Image 1: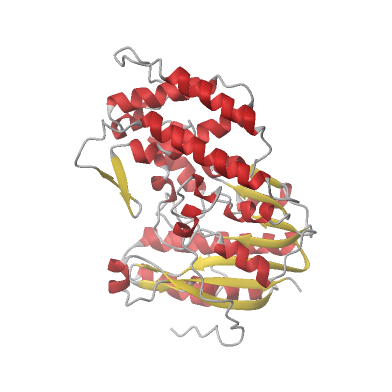
Image 2 (image 1 turned 90 degrees about the vertical axis):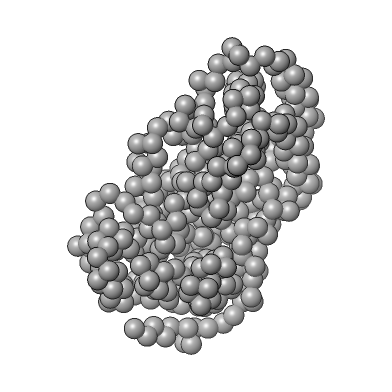
Length: 412
């Protein structure tokens, strides 16, 4: 099947590094290593390309770790973000609230670290404030220390302040756990991490966050950011029609990536999940192509190209994956229709998307999203490849054809 859709609309922005690794040295963005996210280069470049001014409102309906909102706030642009994942909402809310009294935060940190030095014996420590399901991911002494910190943080007065200190704790969980990640897979370490200095890592993270707060507080004319939990398919009750100037977002791709697995520890640690059935329930609510329960192969796709791709996947005998692909594009079609309602006339939507392979069938997501948007009534501005993606193994298998693109379209 030939899908030649680039040539009528091609206008390269530039070859960008949109990997989230680019954020790991940037103030605020570096607070949590969100591997499924994108670099701040994406929203920044789009804002430059579309000349987004301070009078505009930017919407990110797949807010993730809040990259777009942080960039907008630094530029003096108001923004609003939504996500169905409660952890992402929490992260974005903390990362976009900078209106603290820094002296008060420093005093609170010193008091907290002094209180933590009280814990000397671990035999009688109550760790029930951490779900039992994730105990196995930590050495016992480390688990006790994490529990003790969490208990002390819960007694800090002021919700915003508690969330700040809790965020710092959640962000070090992987570093002090018995596991590391290879892609999206959890792998237990061969050697014990019982000698990890939890308090030192926590203190260093807090210092990093406080340093970044001092930096952003000195930025003049900052924008306002709002974050709320909501499914991108249900924005009608949250966003007025024709009220948004720009949508800049990084939606989930049509692949088999389990977005919850990579953030499993903080999801359980913060109490958003308590047992595996909670995780399964949240996964089934998310747009994405992880195989789900009761995915239907009877959904009628909006494009014949999608139907053809689904038929190829079905021919491999994988009905579940075929159903999730159809469900993914059905959901994205609904999302694009909502975008059309929420954008003002001459408003733009920019999406960072990546192609993928499902059962050996290539899913050209950038082309399909552009075609779906055009069918709904958008005017396509650009479909631009910005980087090759995937690790060496995948690039070898797929001959380097995994890549990410920026798709920009306008409501005329």
